[in-house]
Image (cartoon, rainbow, N blue to C red):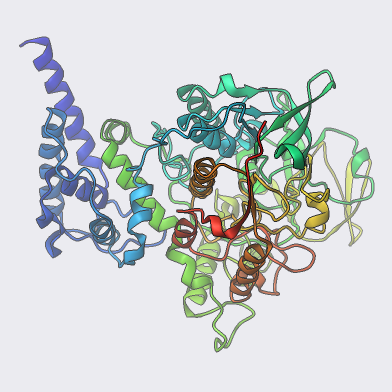
Length: 639
């Protein structure tokens, strides 16, 4: 047998093993596209609806039907591998919606066609070159995920740009947060760019793999040549007569410099700086004490008495991870959180499936697309208040009440013989009122004799002891502060001053941030914010896809500005105000304005400033095109 025949035989065997463990609803859509045979969409082959957040691997189909799909898929994949072209390389939006509906076992509205196409990755970054005037440049603040995404698109369009990054490397939050168990609570096949696939080892990646992915993005697109590391942006100031931003930076030696840019994109993120609780004596704790975002590299917790303040997302990842190493773990609970079952927690992607995802881009694309529906807009209707619902303190509507019963039963089952903790951990407010956490074994951990959950407020820190308001004194060797970040004060790492000399802090009255589609602020021409006010998909979805939608809008505006020789474009105040009025009205009917809880989604005035109230598909439609009639524009000045 020749070596090429051996390779073909080995490859066929690998594909056979992969198809045998593949997700049937995903495989079915790959089969349709490869063969063009729409008969595979007939009722006999249609999967049933999956339960919860499960991948629904069998599609609920009989064994013989599953076998038929797998055999046909293997034949189609091998034929494609041998050179046969994809029969349906670019399905129209209407067909894509039908395919997604069948794959999910439930109706998907027709309006999701274009967004489905974008999520499939069928629109790679192939920006038509934008001809900019001589000397034109863009400046991007931050080289985390959003900043790099912006860089990729600017480079593809041929726009001169530079990125300013205060750290020594790319990655943003995934560079800075390195605590035990740090990872995503969105499936990483979804929490990734639509234009850069990756050979993920787990269904929910941990921090090191996410950091590696972002490093790959930087390398693959040659972004490092455009990044100035270890440099801080001190301030940005609009210079009227130049139609440019004056940007003051500070290098590692502390030396400041001034430069100018026609366009500034703020990609500084919101998960900084860290927030510390106002507890007397906390700064004088007798022992190692640190915020989760500043986890020491050389920390050893073995045999230590550990206290952790906070029980949100980072604590839920850290505590189950360290519980068996410590002598004791005392958790000081600040508020109650809902947590959903996490069936794929720490679950590796089988090698055979990794091979299929890596070698058949259509499979990865459809797997990603199905995750998009499961984790995106599916739950949105359940977050709307029903004014006639009788028990509005505990739930919003019938579906939301069903969620409460489901999650409560899950918690009860996980607690096992510690039902005495039920009252301490089941929230009184409706599910999804605060960020829905993914259970990393939190409730099972509470059964560990080493672990104590304290619900009394901390009165003070005295030496190496935390004293609660009931007078109880608990000693600790290490104090971990898991109290999150100052997310309400957007753009808080540098000063930004717009056309009239006002800073964003003044315009936003400190923590009352507003922006048109989370991206644009009146008085700040040619200034764009990524992950700005009201852009977090609180009901579910990938933040990275939201960032892609924002950037699509920004690139369209830049293109139109250059074609029409516009030197400055500023969102009209009436357009901005009308949009934000609509956002507030929409939030009034949603769970995040429920009075039964405190959440970082809301500021001190009670206004939701972090989440957007719309479906992901609504934001997708809003950001498809920039309309110049919504802007105050100025012709480009000569020179």
